[in-house]
Image (tube, rainbow, N blue to C red; front, side, top):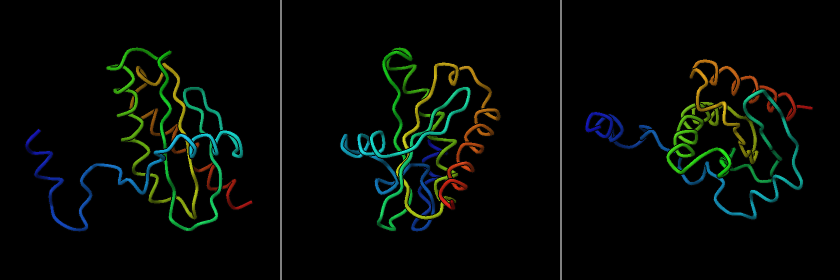
Amino acid sequence: MQAFRQAGDGGPGVQSGRFPKTSRLLKHADFQAVYEKGKKHFSSNVTIFYRDRSDQKGTRVGFAVGKMLGGAVTRNRIRRRLRAVVQKRVALMPGSLDVVVHPRKSVLNLEFARLEAEIDRLFSGLQQGKRQ
């Protein structure tokens, strides 16, 4: 664990392995706006809700991991896995989007490479939908 902290504390401009607050959906109202005014993309293990924003402050992502998926430990593990995959793709998204990621319980046992491929496919669909 110590090595991870040292690697992340490389000074300005070096990613610490965390989502900055500007890249996260934090407020209930933001989640509700995505659900009510947004669109959806589906896959076998994840559903992504998204909507365009008028400002140009970049893409923000939120994770909705409900209690039906398991206890707190299980939900946090699912959230960590999704965050690790999505974090790489957020910087590549053009424009300003709000994205909410809804996993299914199968994400917990899914191979990480397969999860990455699925999220890549969903996010490339978001990019294509944004251009239209």
